Amino acid sequence: MQAQWTCIVLAGQRPGPDILARHFGLSKKALIPVRGVPMISHVVATLHKSSHIAKIIILSQDIEALRPAVDAAGGGILVESQSSISLSIKAQVETLGFASPILVTTADHPLLNVEMIDAFLNQAGGDLAIAMVERKTMLAQFPDAKRTWLRFSDGAWSGANLFALIGHKSVFALELWADAEQDRKKAWRLFLHFGPCLALRALTRTIGLRYALGRAGKRIGLEARLVAMSDPVAAIDVDKLSDHVLAEKILTEREGLSGHNSTA
Image (tube, rainbow, N blue to C red):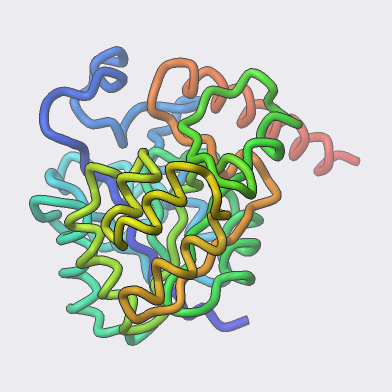
C-alpha cells in the first residue's frame, strides 16, 4: 500500500494554564508523560508506523518546546498554529491544496495505534468523515468510563479525535467549525448551526447521529460520514488525571501482550 495521507496533529492548548499539565509540573499538555514518554511522542511514533501516512504536520503555539519530543519519535513538520483550531487547519489545507487527503488527530491521544488508523481510514469516505465510539461499545470494555456523550436516537456517542478531510468541499466544514468550536460538546447547540429543525431533532433525540451528520453535510454542500469505531480505546484521550491513569494501564497491558507475543 502506498502512503498517501497527510496527518495534521493538533498539539496546541486553549488559553490559560492547563490543569493536567500543571499537575505534572509542565506548561504544555502535549508533553505530559505516559509510561515515561510524552503524549505527542506516542502519537507521532504511531503515525510513522502507519502505511497510510506520508507526511506529518504538528500544529502548536510553541513549536520549539515540542521539537525534542517530536524528533525523538521520528520527526515531523512543526508549524505555528493560529488563533483557533479551525483557522489553523484551514491554513494548512489551503497550503497543501489537497495534494493528498488529510487526517486530523490530536496530541493528547497517546493510545492511538495503527489498527485504529487503519479501521478509520478504510471506512472513511465522502468529503468528510468523523470517528466516534458508541456508549455501549465503550461500557462493554470500560464500564466505569466517564466521557462526554452526544445523545441521539441511535445511541450516545463520544468523539475519537480522528477526522478525515477527503476533498475540497471539506473546507466548508472548516468554515463552519470556526463558528461552532465552542458548541462541540452540546449536540443541539452544534446542530443549531445547521438550522433550528435539525437542532430540535438533536435536542429531542428523534434523529440518529449518522443521519444527522448526513443532513448537516448536505446543508453546506458536502457528504459527511460517521465512522463508528469498534475499539472503544479510540475515544480515550487524556484530559484529566483519571484518563492518564487509565492510559498508563492500557499501555502497560499492551506492552505486556507485545512482550508475550514476541517470546511465544
